[in-house]
Image 1 (tube, rainbow, N blue to C red):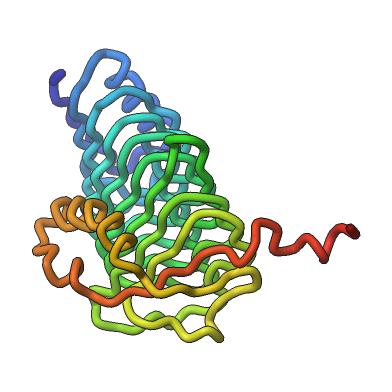
Image 2: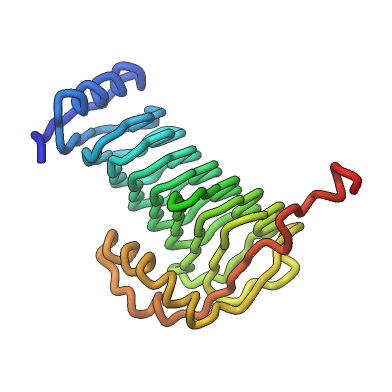
Amino acid sequence: MGKTVTIDAKGMHYTPLNKKIRQAVADGAGEIIIDNVLGQRFIGNGLRGDATIVVNGVPGGDLCMFMSGPTCIVHGNADHAPGNTMNAGKVIIHGSAGDAVAHSMRGGTVFVRGNIGYRGGIHMKQYDDKRPILVVGGNAQSFLGEYMAGGLLIVLGMDGSEYFGRGVGSGIHGGEIVIRGDVDGSRLGVGAKKLPLTEDDRQRIAPVIREFAGAFDLDPAELLNAEFTRIVPASARPFAGKYTWE
């Protein structure tokens, strides 16, 4: 592992901050600790390799956009769209996050310990072995998994609340959404349908839940034994009749 570089981001504009981060990675740093982060955008954007970035504070929008490989750990909340169009790597957020978490993510993993805003996982997609994963420890607002084209999205409801959003999986045409507890059919969006979680499904997602629990030093037993609803596409072309004539 390369050396550790510490950056004090207090009062720093996001442009010089991100230049410092990219320079540290180019110089072979294995760990980059960024203190006093307060709303700086685009942290970790486009980074490659295997460095670990530790963010102490609240990063701004589009955290780790287009990232391919590194791990980013946020000790705080995050603004909108962390993991936007990420290719590979991992984002671990110890607080909550805003809207459009994992927007268009193509690979890698985003773990959020708390809640997320609207349109989490919008247009996540997958191809061959590239399968993005978003796991939310708390709850999520409406239009979860909107236009989802692939990947796995899990909402664990660790705060004890039932899922309260609407329009779940609106326009979904690939991938799957797994939500703790029963999700009333009236909360599903156009093109989504719900299925019971089978034992095979449960075994398939168990490693993901264990990894999530490990990231936050949680006991996974209760999560592994909880009841879940699985939401999948009703068809591969949910709006075919709206825009085309066949």
